[in-house]
Length: 376
Image (cartoon, helix red, strand yellow):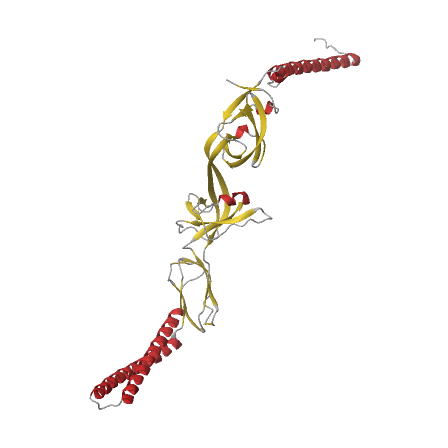
């Protein structure tokens, strides 16, 4: 059997300490090597030697920038009227129920027209009587005119005949007015859908009698639908008549609709949220789109002007940023104001003009006033 080597406790301690010292020495050697390599490759060392720092340059030019903004919204109707009973009456028939989709003019509720129909019959009979009186008065006037032509009738008799005819014609006008009113009142008892829409709440079969101005139907029109959301106030000045949005709805995957900014809603910024309500009207509402659905409006704001690559920006904070401009080989830090921003570019609204040269990359090593040279 092979003999085992046993070390004493002092010897074991010595071996452990030696191993630790070797590891520390190796780490120090690796760190020094890395520092030497970094010093050799650090572009800022050129500054210490009085040499220009290498950088990539970019010449400012006009460019179209399209910034996409997504607005969380909901579908809303332009019209949600409440339909009331025009007068007291008995409910004759209820044609629809809650949630029903109806077309314009569709019957909703009938109120018994019997009392008005009796009044209409009376008014119609009165008109027939007055029509006979008018015809008789007209014939009498003609007879009196004939007699007057023969000097067989006085002027006062002629005037009386004319007055009788006028009164008969006035009675006919009143009769017709009353008939028209009663016909309109009877038609009003037939409650119809004012437009294409959805029944949100309608009286049920338990209703047998209604009074004037009773609420009968809560109606939501679907003829004109829009999407209502809030937009950060910085975009309010960019809202122009005819601005378009692309609308998608999570509940209707695959459906995309276009919408136009509503001219009837003037965006007003809320100081608390620093945002404003905006409304886009759907150009061609899909029958599947209902008020209340959540939606997303995609709005594209475009502008053309001086533009910088996003990678060139320095100390960016929102719409404020800085870049290093290059003049005669010297880099100067300059503050600029940004406009529209897309995935790669930013419009410059203040601080730069077309033709100026900036540092596109390498600016992280620069200080204001450094000499720079373009990397070839």
